[in-house]
Length: 459
Image 1 (cartoon, rainbow, N blue to C red):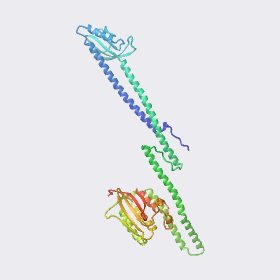
Image 2 (image 1 turned 180 degrees about the horizontal axis):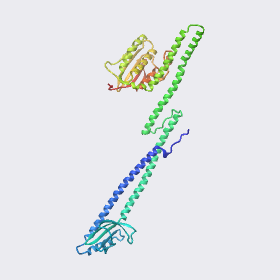
Image 3 (image 1 turned 180 degrees about the vertical axis):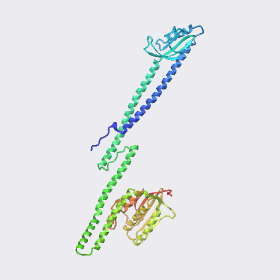
Image 4 (image 1 turned 30 degrees about the vertical axis):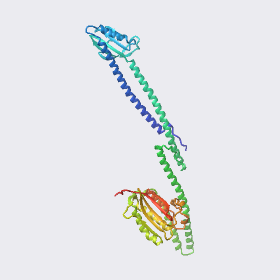
């Protein structure tokens, strides 16, 4: 099936970028509208103030029963505005024109708006006027709104072009950022496709800036590392099972065939049946151990975890196996600090099984006279459980391999066992968040299990 790359318009990063661009432009428009409204209100207030001030200056030239100065003032102000951006009108009570550059008619007292039709003035030019009574006459002062309208138009055009520019920058920037994010997401998708096709070594490329995508990619790569290791482990386990169980199964088949021949000949087959039972028991024990390790690795036993003193577990193992070691010509001792408790969070039964496997391995593979020691020590916020012996040890090059299922050293293939003891130890340690290290005890082997400590165990 051919993989199709989603278009930029349909990609989630680009849609998010468009959403944020829209919100940004909307916020810019809203803020611009508020600024425009405030500016218009301020211009209107200042225009009214200018008109009122001009009206007051003209009206103050009137003296009682002497309107000549008022007429002269109105005409002088009118002459100063040849383009008629300011209009002045003085009419008598009957509406006759007395002075000014236009005749006001029908305007109410106070502020008002009107459209003037005057020679040399564009049609329907709007004026803001103030009308009042001066000495029984009507005085009107009007200012054109053309300048205010022009300023408002300039501001509106500026906001309009600014909105288009910002929208363009936001969309282009969003597309650029979205394309970069999309390329990284495409890299993740391509890696997962390769993994689904069997290329378990494929990994998501990182750019190294420690952002959220890098963090997720790192976690996915870690999961792929573990998946690859598990698949490799399963392949190796399958090969080991086929190799290591082939011999006992062939031996069991030969024993049964031999017993069949003896039965046909009327001979006693009790010895052959005992051998067959021993072989089948060994095969069953191997499969039981494999299933037990699988259950432990699945984490099903974590529900039984409690805070416990691992020193008491070590002490119990020491008591149980001390006589066994003595009967086998070896010695087993425990080194615990009296009165000291070392708490960890775990499953007591699994810990007992883990330490029992380590002690049994030492008893099985060490010669008579070997001394085995169990100890518990603390190191900061860690608890170290150690099993040491002065036996033959394990070569440095084999110490990691012995944790593999069914892996056995050449020197151990003549001794009983399935090669699963240390695999179970590793599985129990991983379940408890611990690490297992094999070191040279000079002579012998030191197995060190490093647990996270519990400072204050739950009641």
